[in-house]
Length: 271
Image (cartoon, rainbow, N blue to C red; front, side):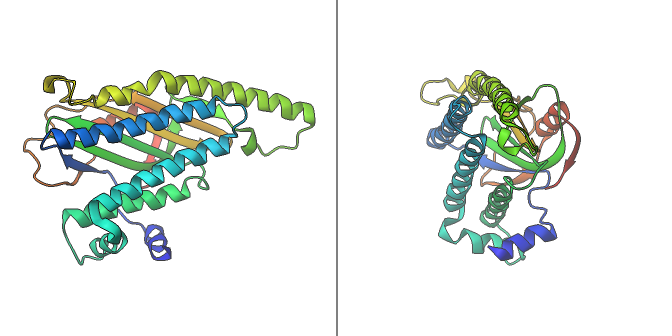
């Protein structure tokens, strides 16, 4: 673990402006993709419920979300590379192997480790874009700095406020934070279906209606203020010419670049 932390500190470039491209060669692969996206949507439903619960501190909501994401990446790592994913990812970065399994293991493992830092690293933005194409889908992950635009929903955490307050002020602060969290919960409830709409059930939806879809999810914290964006995103139909035979890394693509420009300002890509 410490070896990988040292790698991150020295600056791995595996995530920088890159995405994973996964083929969808048959309906079975589409079903698996659909089920994974339904799990992400269900996690969004759960987050909205927790945000709306006055008895659940925002720290627990945040930890619950991070734990869900960590489990998801660990599952992907084991799917791609098996139990030896750490050694495989390390061998790829050391130049000891040059194959798609090593590339994806390194990509997902860096995401996994970066997520471990998210709770303690302030002012870091997590950016996720998933896009569906007729014969494949792409997953683009970035860690950024910048400022959220007006489309973001903002909510406050009284736990993260560093101030010396009396009892009345603490009660007022708690009430104000609860109000902003309620608004964020409502936003998620209204928007989480964009994930389901992006990847409809292949067993009930004609192929012509499920060829293209996508969404962007951006989250970040600045002190006691949390920000969130969850919106539909349209892929570029002419992006890929050939059908992929194996998974691999590709440039992040124009849709992801547009999303960064539309929803964030003063953006700097960390990794």
